[in-house]
Image (cartoon, rainbow, N blue to C red; front, side, top):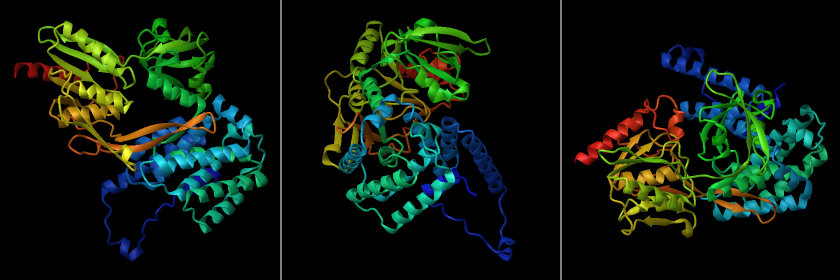
Length: 543
């Protein structure tokens, strides 16, 4: 008998069947050695993925399948498994989110249906492409299936129904959907209402919980950047935009049995406690990270200003070290490590870590300070910068361009079609070198693309991530939460699409291993890309 997880994979999309040949035909076909080795590699990907799924390590499963999709593009089954893993991960996070659970308790089913209607309306009005309402409803059913396999969800709603009893219900609902294709927003709303009543009556799953899954699915089914935001997540997004938040002042990445500290914000509580980029958090408040999910451990790091948290960190091969840190509001600087790195040649360096409301102001201050120190050339380090505000990227690019297009955006509505132009006033004319890596994304690519296409500087490093889309944040009127929707795509001054292509460097320097000293703003001796950028900047001075 197939497991519910197997049924989930099948329900995400219909996987094309491979053509098969009879014995006489197959005898005439020679299978290349690389084809068999490719099949073996795929089999190993599926084996490792299945192991992560069976142990419900969804964070690791998502990372595993994302890497597999990059290595084996075009395999629909890999995409399906990635979708299911992401759905599990998102659901586990929601059911650990107090703001989401509070909404589940306080709002009735009619109110949740109203939220679903509002979300569909915003998608119809603002999403970059025309909506496929049928696929959004299908993803809603997939989300409900995932919810019924997750222990946190089952415990929250005191569900006792067995998986075997659930499968026939889904089969019937899916047959109904197949017989009645959903072509309009109103039909999507009506089908969600029908499904909520069926699952409540036959499975005991509350209608409110069903609507919640349809809401989350409606956004996440659009693309990998669109998403439903709980009240807490919406607050976090606005904190990032403003450039401050309450916490420890670190950026972390989930790993097996630990949380890797990717960045320690200067002047924050973690920095003052002695924590360094590259440290691994192995326990939080006495609970080993390996004994719970990494997402739960990460949530334990959060708290109100003035509260204390105990963490155990491991540095390299040393014994774990205990730290007690008091949470407080942390101002996140856009600029780190601004300095003159070659006094004789006057080469300045600054690391731009994000694009937020304060970025333009922070950059002005850094540039004038470097100018006082004799700056005659500048290296802008965008490595690891995931992006941020479109307007902030335009403002930064405008400081180095005196004319011409910075970036163009195109969406469904005329209000999304914009051509951002540089202005002469306030332009810095120093020679530029821009450092990129494969994690430089979004707003970073706007800046790098403008510098490249306008021939304003030299790009050094790796091809950037290739996230050429603009997202809007839409708070919901009918509940404490919001949605993030892709509203437009952006193009470099020469009209090049950034999505899937990224910005190509003039001088390619392959990053062999991540240097967390670099991410922390420390120019380490083994930073090959920085060394190349410095050589390029010196040559610019001699021309």
